[in-house]
Image (cartoon, rainbow, N blue to C red; front, side, top):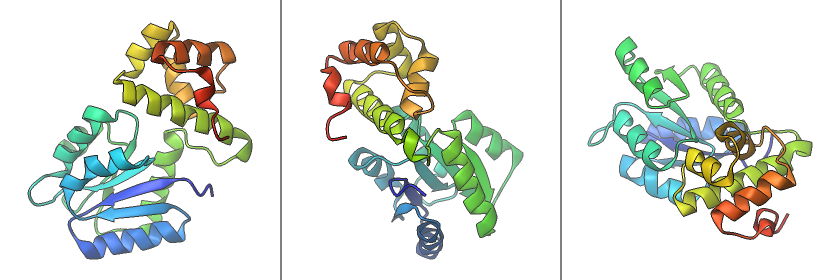
Length: 199
């Protein structure tokens, strides 16, 4: 498994954090765990995470509120919600806010790891070394876009390409043409070479 897949675990229960952190580490992921929901958004600004595992019921701030905070600045990251109190209404709310999956506590670790793997793949993270370059370029496009304060739609309009093309490039699911990258770099006001530095 690619060693650059970063997962943020958020649960007010330290024992749960340790359990999930251990299971995810054993599966080959890089993991950071936090017990304070207020640390989620700062953590996402400090480091690029591919997935957030988020407890629904936390004191002070619910998982739904944290998910809303995440979506204000990051529309693309995969989010798996965990709860010991499942309901149809809550599941619907999670999906409306862009949650990727919904896992019930107490944990069946096989089911949990399967949900994590599925969520990561659904968001276009690839494990094939041949496709790694596409993913790295996509991550850089996304990073520069977020730094400039553009949504995918705004960048697409400015670069005169489709929103789905921007999405595919950022996810690394489609190789970007030099022409598309040039248009994106012009729209972002950066040199084309910035997408390839250090590769």
